[in-house]
Length: 317
Image 1 (cartoon, rainbow, N blue to C red):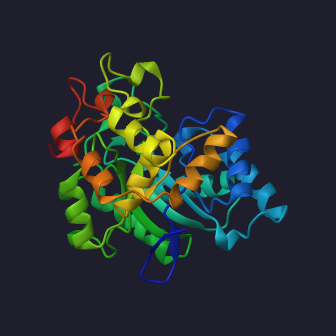
Image 2 (cartoon, rainbow, N blue to C red):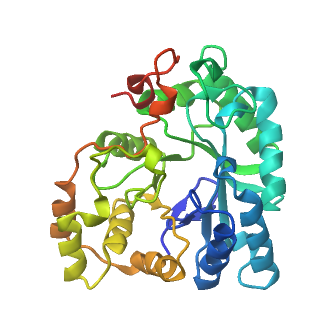
């Protein structure tokens, strides 16, 4: 398995199991299956509402000798209601308790958006906290303290645009060690990819299969279905692979980590096998032509009228 190397010598497996949208009862089985077949990277977040279940599966799998703790990379995230520096540590402690871990390998600021304490999803604009009241730099300083104390090995962000990454680089003591963002052939983000490579900030691709299984309330009426894309199907047929395997392999070929979610044992296995799929230059060029700048996750609920946030502010578009 290819890995991403960090300055201290740590290696993060580039292919991991995503757990967003894994329903109660499914996350435990998915994580158990993943570790059993050879996954060494699991991506989590408290807002997914399944970290306790993931933690049980991790503990059981490690106790059963399926893997050693040092060989399994665990990522989690700070939710938007815990940006105030005094809430950062308690949020991490809850995640560590749920995951049954002493140390987290990677901790990310989930969004550059702040909510009132205790809010999962804001019911009104009044539940959103402007960044001038809770600056990202203050949240980041609290993240840096967690790393300095050894509670987390690495810190990073998710859904950050280039200006916000630059802000943390300029104002922080520790530069972001990861940016987890939506990446797939319909949203290739070449500018971000170029910036990240220049600055040495690794990227992790979420929703690499197009997030077709997210709630209908989050879907546009006319959104394209990535797994039905003819070009992807043609390439898959050429390699005797599945469309999902082509999409996972494409992400790895761009030197980005990738965290496809599945709770189906056969798909979990197939996604792992995608690491062995070699795409040709012609394949990559054909996929490059599919870019349409299409976001499946727009954060539109946080940019409604009266919100302190706008789409252009979040995405720098």
